[in-house]
Image 1 (cartoon, rainbow, N blue to C red):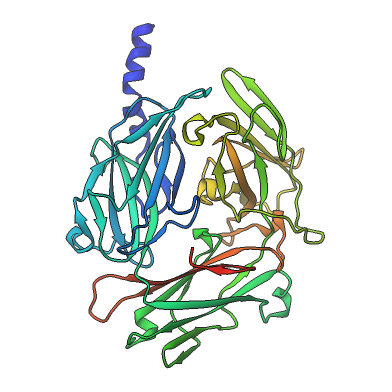
Image 2 (image 1 turned 180 degrees about the vertical axis):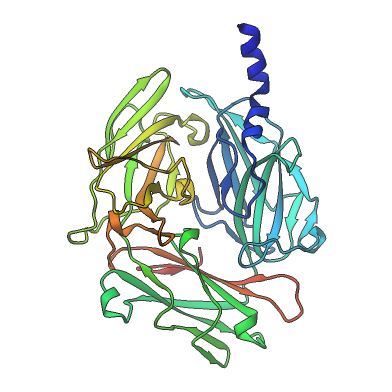
Length: 425
């Protein structure tokens, strides 16, 4: 019996990879079930957009936890991508100084936690790997220096600011959308020569840094001297949706915001949230949120990174199914707004109730419920959350330029704005 258990333990990493038949994708993805709480941001501000300025002192920070504990031989590399996240297919010498890959050597073990884990962290650029051109990048983490053993892929951006982006949020011109959607109009102000703005310039607009909302703009409505204007009446109309729901698990001794109960079962900490109701009808209710972000916090320890515990969070939504051919999910930046088996809600037709249990690290979390309509292949929050023009959202605008004859796209402009202000990051 003990020999069998020992053999299974030794084979566990192999079994995990045997079940993982995926290769790297150019998306924010986690390829192993033991990897949790992947964070990627500009080091100047926690949970900021993972974007830094070329040749600056800014750093991209990537961190994650391995719930198997111990020490693993994790390696990483970066790859330059086109504006639509395909491989640029250029030599690493074109976009990297230093080495092509390196081992992650910064790790710490958890302490005073029910569930043991190892916390890993790496920052870029560093003495080993230094990107030297702007654009989209994928950071890839893999095991044992073997790229056939993917662990994490994470998108980040390097900006070579050459144009200025000005934008506004306004009501759509369509009467039926004026109270439910937000329209983004923007202009690109430039001093560099752009031979063909319809071919050389691409602009991507995104809501709350959710890749599912990314909208590509290739044709400006007006081309003026040193200015491209994007204000087509049918473009960049986003559902306002609603303010994000939230919960607080910074403490496991006291029940904080939206926490109904906390209990321990077989060395597992369980957190039951109050049951949620649909917000698709009724008036808009203003409340402060973090536009989908989450923050790892633990009020009962000194180090959030290694003393915050993992808990099973029970989400419950009391709502009838919006359709017969679709699925419901709970999403936020904590899972990169990804619709997969981990974020999928089960449905009890008798109770008219959706529910799911997700393992999450202690902290402050924003979340929302969305419906995937399999007939239209669209993801909608409106069936559960409603949609209002008044909702405070953030919008990111990325401007890409490919010089005539060039072999890659460069990121030459960026703006991050919300209903109240516009800022660089």
